[in-house]
Amino acid sequence: MVSLIEEVQNNCVSDNISIVDMLRKSLILARRLKIEEFEKWIKLELDGYNDISELPKYRTIEGLLKAETAYGVKILQMPRSDLQDILQKRPYLNPISKIEELYNNHKSNTLELIYPLETIEMIQKGLNCESRPFLSVEPSELKNILDTVKNTVLEWTLRLQDDGIMGENFSFTENEKNIANQNRNIYNLIIIQQINIKLNKDEIFEKLFEIKKIIKDSSLLNEKKEEYTKDIQSVELELQNNPIPDVDKIKNVFSNILIGATGSLLAEGLKPLIYMICFSLGINIGFWE
Image (cartoon, rainbow, N blue to C red; front, side, top):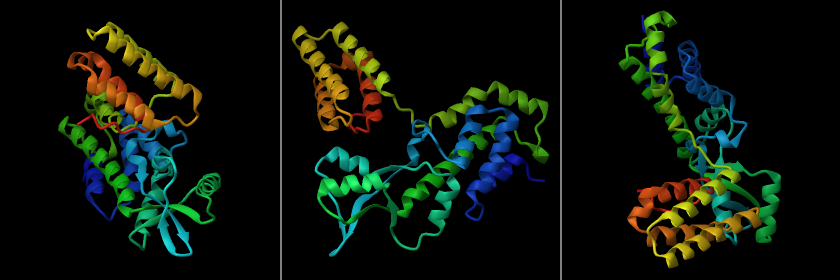
C-alpha cells in the first residue's frame, strides 16, 4: 500500500489530481506531525488569505493595465510610474480552488481581471476617460502560483521521506513523530522561505533609524555622513507626509547611497536594511544579484 507521503508526492507530479485534494492530504500530514507553519500555510491556501501582510510573494500576479475603447483594446499609461506599477500588480487572496478553476477554464491567451469600482473610478479620473480598465494577465501567472504550491509541498515531503517519515496506512509511528519533532524548525523553514515578509510603517522607520546609526558609526568622511543622513531624513519626510510616497524619489536616494558607500559600510548591514525597506515599499532597486 502506498504511504501517505508517497501519495502526496504522486499528487504533486500528476496533472490529473486537483491541487485542493493534494493540499487536504498535506494538511493531514502537517496536523498529525504538528508542523505548525506548514499547517497554517496549507489552511491559508485552502481558505484564502484575509490579511495581505501574510500573502506570499508568489501570490502577486503581474499584467498590463488595459481598457476596451472605441478603437479596440488599448494599453493605458498612468501619469505616475509608481501608480502604474501598483495597478499592474495584483495580490491574489482567493482560495487556491478559485485560482485552479480560473486557470483550468481559460479559453484565450489572456485573462481579464476586474478592478474594484473605486479603483476603476480613480483610473478613469486620472486619465480623463470613460473606458473600463482591467488587468490583462497571461494564464502562466496563475500556473506559477499552482506550480509553486506543488513544488513547495513536494520539497517538504521529500525532506520528510529522507528523514524516514512515511505515514504508512495514513498514520505515523512514535519514532516518526519524534523525528518530526526534532526537525520541526527545518521543515517549517521550507515554508517560511516562501512567505513574503513585509515591514509595516513603524518597522520601516526603525530600519531607517538603524541606517542612520550605521552611517554615523562608519568610517566615512564627515561630509559624506552628513550628506547620507540628510538623504535618509528626506525619505522619512516623504513617508510621513505622503499617503502614497514617491517611490522613484526613495529609490534614487537609496541607489545613490549604495553606489557611493564603501564596501565596509555595506558589510555592516546597510544593504540588507535598504533591501527590506525597498521590498516592503514595492521598489525594485536592482542591487540584489
